[in-house]
Length: 489
Image 1 (tube, helix red, strand yellow):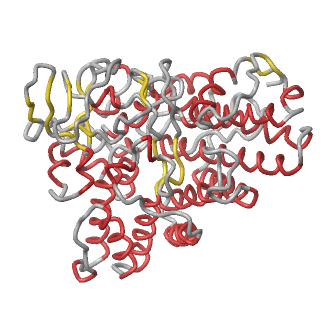
Image 2 (cartoon, rainbow, N blue to C red):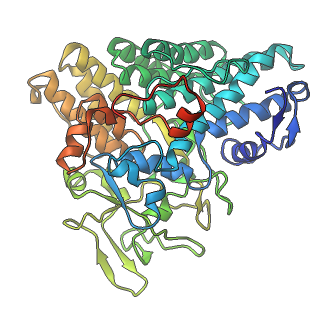
Image 3 (cartoon, rainbow, N blue to C red):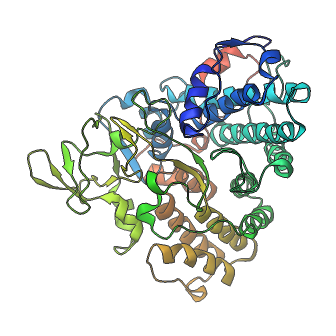
């Protein structure tokens, strides 16, 4: 690790385009040592931006496919046709093997590459020739990146080796459950004091207090630490900075992306090389799509229609209230290139989710929509669930759910509608499905509610209880003999 070769070239370009929206122009290093990089803020930030970019996974098709693969394991979506054998089939068909999909490398390697950058910063920041205030903030961001990276690894694989410095041996055993959870929690808590308030960060896409609190909320939610979850969600709300964006249809468009509902995003900017963009729409367009008669959206010059198509399952589509505004991002008919009106409604499992709606930032197959990681709506529903898990049905949970439903233009629910905590839990799970489809949240929600495996089995998949975690990739097992595979694989 004394010489860092070519680790920043691609990742810095990604971050410059995606995280910074071309507002910085730092030097690009092809071969450097820490001594060279740590003699200026620009040098240190080049390592920092590489860390952000690696964990964000916004490169070529990885950004889209990293959402689609786990989503197709749920009751929401499925992929059909094209080159899906290279990335989705292992997940969609529950034949998880740690070998048969390139996504295993994406899910394992990229977080660890971001963690590596964070470790380099934390080992060298004290001796950096930069202002003390910059040292404190950049160190806090490094802890944030490391917490984010390990959070992703934990959600996918369970406990993994905790690489906290560059001098550890290459062969390292997995952490325990408690060690892993405690480490992630501590990373975000350590980052909090020196991170800026939301809206005060030096550059859009850099960490802030709201993002650290939001990740803690989600960590506590998914590890069933209900009181901590409720309290941290309240802390986010007490910032009095975040709010629900008024129109769900417009929320995800690139022209509205810097809004106060998006607490943390994987930022994107279109470019023909797709080094910093989201390519999702290439999977969403129906065959020979020309236009949407309801909104006037047309297939742009240079747009692509990939062979692999992402479709919404009929049962999930039909579960929406017909007046639910969140259905507005689901295409149910279109005009094809022959001028014919094509119906996509059930029973053919053909509705197309256009959640990352094409906007102004398009370059051929590349789109500039930011991809939300945590939204304020998630914080509201997380607190509602935590309070219900602690106390059973209560008015505050109902009010929080109704706040989200009102934006969807739905009638309020009432406390009297729920006889016990389980019935309200089911309502929250349903609400989260309608609210967060195609945001890489459904899998973790179904796992937490104990319905991930049973729903897959009902669809005819060979899902087994151990499939709540992915297998450790075989290449990682081969490289590190101390690694133990997840149970069942």
